[in-house]
Figure (tube, helix red, strand yellow):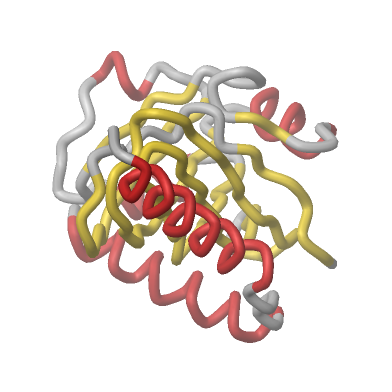
Length: 181
Protein backbone atom coordinates (compact mmCIF):
# COMPACT_ATOMS: atom_id res chain seq x y z
CA UNK A 1 0.00 0.00 0.00
CA UNK A 2 1.43 3.37 -0.92
CA UNK A 3 1.88 6.28 1.45
CA UNK A 4 -1.02 8.26 -0.10
CA UNK A 5 -3.44 5.35 0.53
CA UNK A 6 -2.36 5.05 4.14
CA UNK A 7 -2.70 8.80 4.73
CA UNK A 8 -6.15 8.76 3.07
CA UNK A 9 -7.30 5.84 5.24
CA UNK A 10 -6.09 7.50 8.41
CA UNK A 11 -7.77 10.81 7.45
CA UNK A 12 -11.12 9.18 6.65
CA UNK A 13 -11.04 7.13 9.85
CA UNK A 14 -10.07 10.15 11.96
CA UNK A 15 -12.91 12.17 10.43
CA UNK A 16 -15.43 9.38 11.09
CA UNK A 17 -14.33 8.90 14.68
CA UNK A 18 -14.19 12.65 15.32
CA UNK A 19 -17.72 13.02 13.96
CA UNK A 20 -18.89 10.27 16.30
CA UNK A 21 -17.21 11.76 19.35
CA UNK A 22 -17.94 15.42 18.68
CA UNK A 23 -21.51 15.05 17.42
CA UNK A 24 -23.70 16.80 19.96
CA UNK A 25 -25.92 14.47 21.93
CA UNK A 26 -29.55 14.65 20.91
CA UNK A 27 -32.10 15.86 23.43
CA UNK A 28 -34.42 13.31 25.00
CA UNK A 29 -37.25 14.77 22.94
CA UNK A 30 -35.26 14.26 19.70
CA UNK A 31 -34.35 10.72 20.71
CA UNK A 32 -37.98 9.93 21.58
CA UNK A 33 -39.18 11.20 18.20
CA UNK A 34 -36.53 9.18 16.35
CA UNK A 35 -37.30 6.05 18.41
CA UNK A 36 -41.04 6.32 17.64
CA UNK A 37 -40.27 6.73 13.93
CA UNK A 38 -37.89 3.74 13.92
CA UNK A 39 -40.42 1.55 15.75
CA UNK A 40 -43.16 2.54 13.29
CA UNK A 41 -40.87 1.54 10.38
CA UNK A 42 -39.96 -1.68 12.20
CA UNK A 43 -43.62 -2.61 12.75
CA UNK A 44 -44.62 -1.69 9.18
CA UNK A 45 -42.04 -4.01 7.62
CA UNK A 46 -43.30 -7.25 9.17
CA UNK A 47 -46.63 -7.97 10.82
CA UNK A 48 -44.94 -10.19 13.45
CA UNK A 49 -42.66 -7.46 14.81
CA UNK A 50 -45.27 -5.67 16.92
CA UNK A 51 -46.21 -8.94 18.63
CA UNK A 52 -42.55 -9.83 19.22
CA UNK A 53 -41.91 -6.42 20.79
CA UNK A 54 -45.02 -6.81 22.94
CA UNK A 55 -43.72 -10.17 24.24
CA UNK A 56 -40.23 -8.80 24.93
CA UNK A 57 -39.25 -7.78 28.46
CA UNK A 58 -37.59 -4.66 27.03
CA UNK A 59 -36.95 -3.03 23.65
CA UNK A 60 -33.75 -1.06 22.98
CA UNK A 61 -33.99 1.15 19.90
CA UNK A 62 -31.14 2.93 18.12
CA UNK A 63 -32.84 4.82 15.29
CA UNK A 64 -29.60 6.16 13.76
CA UNK A 65 -26.33 4.25 14.02
CA UNK A 66 -23.61 5.71 11.82
CA UNK A 67 -20.65 3.53 10.91
CA UNK A 68 -17.72 4.72 8.81
CA UNK A 69 -14.13 3.91 8.07
CA UNK A 70 -11.52 2.51 5.74
CA UNK A 71 -9.72 -0.41 7.35
CA UNK A 72 -10.24 1.16 10.77
CA UNK A 73 -13.80 2.17 11.50
CA UNK A 74 -16.04 3.59 14.15
CA UNK A 75 -19.75 3.66 14.89
CA UNK A 76 -22.04 5.76 17.06
CA UNK A 77 -25.75 6.01 17.77
CA UNK A 78 -28.17 7.17 20.46
CA UNK A 79 -31.39 5.54 21.52
CA UNK A 80 -33.79 4.57 24.25
CA UNK A 81 -34.80 1.51 26.25
CA UNK A 82 -38.52 0.90 26.56
CA UNK A 83 -40.21 -1.43 29.01
CA UNK A 84 -43.91 -2.04 28.35
CA UNK A 85 -43.99 1.00 26.05
CA UNK A 86 -42.44 3.40 28.58
CA UNK A 87 -38.94 4.84 28.17
CA UNK A 88 -36.78 3.86 31.14
CA UNK A 89 -33.39 5.11 29.97
CA UNK A 90 -31.29 6.62 27.19
CA UNK A 91 -28.24 4.86 25.76
CA UNK A 92 -25.47 5.20 23.22
CA UNK A 93 -23.85 2.50 21.13
CA UNK A 94 -20.20 2.85 20.14
CA UNK A 95 -17.74 0.59 18.47
CA UNK A 96 -14.51 0.34 16.58
CA UNK A 97 -13.22 -2.19 14.09
CA UNK A 98 -9.97 -2.88 12.33
CA UNK A 99 -9.68 -4.45 8.91
CA UNK A 100 -13.30 -5.17 8.05
CA UNK A 101 -14.89 -1.77 7.51
CA UNK A 102 -14.93 0.00 4.15
CA UNK A 103 -17.31 2.92 3.49
CA UNK A 104 -19.93 4.78 5.45
CA UNK A 105 -23.53 3.97 6.25
CA UNK A 106 -26.40 4.63 8.61
CA UNK A 107 -28.85 2.06 9.90
CA UNK A 108 -31.45 1.46 12.59
CA UNK A 109 -31.28 -1.23 15.26
CA UNK A 110 -34.01 -2.70 17.43
CA UNK A 111 -32.80 -5.05 20.17
CA UNK A 112 -35.42 -7.19 21.90
CA UNK A 113 -34.67 -8.58 25.36
CA UNK A 114 -36.92 -11.64 25.25
CA UNK A 115 -36.40 -12.70 28.89
CA UNK A 116 -36.49 -10.89 32.23
CA UNK A 117 -33.02 -12.28 33.00
CA UNK A 118 -31.56 -10.76 29.80
CA UNK A 119 -33.19 -7.40 30.55
CA UNK A 120 -32.01 -7.45 34.17
CA UNK A 121 -28.44 -8.30 33.15
CA UNK A 122 -28.45 -5.39 30.70
CA UNK A 123 -29.86 -2.95 33.28
CA UNK A 124 -27.34 -4.08 35.91
CA UNK A 125 -24.37 -3.67 33.58
CA UNK A 126 -22.07 -0.68 33.51
CA UNK A 127 -21.54 -0.94 29.77
CA UNK A 128 -22.90 -3.91 27.85
CA UNK A 129 -20.96 -5.36 24.93
CA UNK A 130 -22.80 -7.26 22.21
CA UNK A 131 -21.26 -10.69 21.81
CA UNK A 132 -19.27 -10.54 25.05
CA UNK A 133 -21.99 -9.86 27.63
CA UNK A 134 -24.78 -11.54 25.69
CA UNK A 135 -25.16 -13.82 22.70
CA UNK A 136 -27.36 -11.87 20.31
CA UNK A 137 -29.21 -13.35 17.35
CA UNK A 138 -29.01 -10.75 14.57
CA UNK A 139 -31.68 -10.50 11.87
CA UNK A 140 -30.65 -8.33 8.92
CA UNK A 141 -33.45 -6.54 7.07
CA UNK A 142 -36.78 -5.83 8.67
CA UNK A 143 -38.82 -7.92 6.29
CA UNK A 144 -36.71 -10.97 7.09
CA UNK A 145 -38.53 -13.81 8.77
CA UNK A 146 -37.29 -15.11 12.10
CA UNK A 147 -37.13 -18.82 12.64
CA UNK A 148 -37.90 -20.74 15.82
CA UNK A 149 -34.20 -21.15 16.64
CA UNK A 150 -33.58 -17.39 16.42
CA UNK A 151 -36.48 -16.66 18.74
CA UNK A 152 -35.03 -19.01 21.40
CA UNK A 153 -32.21 -16.51 22.04
CA UNK A 154 -32.68 -14.26 25.08
CA UNK A 155 -31.64 -11.24 22.95
CA UNK A 156 -32.68 -10.73 19.31
CA UNK A 157 -31.46 -7.74 17.29
CA UNK A 158 -32.86 -6.39 14.02
CA UNK A 159 -30.77 -4.25 11.67
CA UNK A 160 -32.75 -2.32 9.04
CA UNK A 161 -33.07 0.88 7.04
CA UNK A 162 -29.48 0.74 5.85
CA UNK A 163 -28.40 3.74 3.81
CA UNK A 164 -24.95 4.18 2.33
CA UNK A 165 -22.34 1.67 1.42
CA UNK A 166 -20.41 -0.37 3.91
CA UNK A 167 -18.97 -3.86 3.78
CA UNK A 168 -19.57 -4.69 7.48
CA UNK A 169 -22.94 -4.93 9.23
CA UNK A 170 -21.84 -6.88 12.31
CA UNK A 171 -23.04 -5.80 15.74
CA UNK A 172 -20.34 -7.89 17.42
CA UNK A 173 -18.26 -5.85 19.86
CA UNK A 174 -20.55 -2.81 19.90
CA UNK A 175 -20.70 -1.34 23.41
CA UNK A 176 -23.92 0.04 24.86
CA UNK A 177 -23.68 2.51 27.74
CA UNK A 178 -26.05 4.81 29.57
CA UNK A 179 -26.31 8.20 27.87
CA UNK A 180 -28.31 10.28 30.30
CA UNK A 181 -31.56 10.17 32.27
